[in-house]
Amino acid sequence: YDFFYLPIDFSTTHSVGYAFINFITEAELARFRSVYSGLKLSEDSPKVCEICEAKVQGKDGNVEYYRNSTVMGMDERYHPVVLDHGVRLPFPKPTRPLGPVQRRPPRAGGRV
Image (cartoon, rainbow, N blue to C red; front, side, top):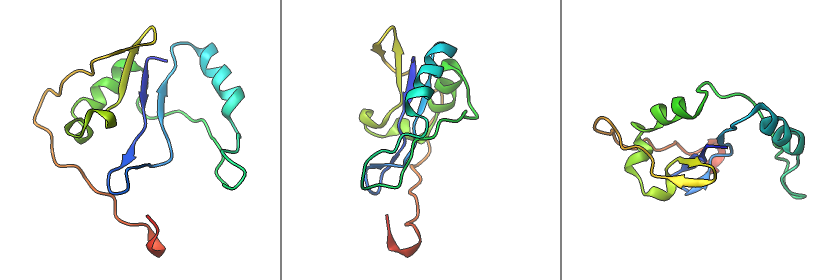
C-alpha cells in the first residue's frame, strides 16, 4: 500500500473503528480481503473486519483530500501516512489555512 490513515477520536484518543488503505495493486487488495474480510478481532469482542470501498480513491486523491483536513493541524502521529516502496514520505503541507478540529459528540448511553 502507499497510503494509510487511521482516524482517531481526539476526545478519547482511540481509533474510531476503521481505516483507509490504498493498495497499489488489485492483487494486493484481493490478498488483504481474503485474510481480513470477516475476521473477528478478538474472542471478547463482537467486532468483525469488513472491507469496502471508500468514496475517495487512489493515493493522489487521498493526499488532496486530507492535506487540508483539520487533522493536519494535530500532532503528526495523527496524520495520514504516505509511502513509497515501504518508506514513509513527508505528507504534503496544507495549501490553505486549516479550520478547528471538530470534536465528536459522546455516544448515546454515555459511552465514548
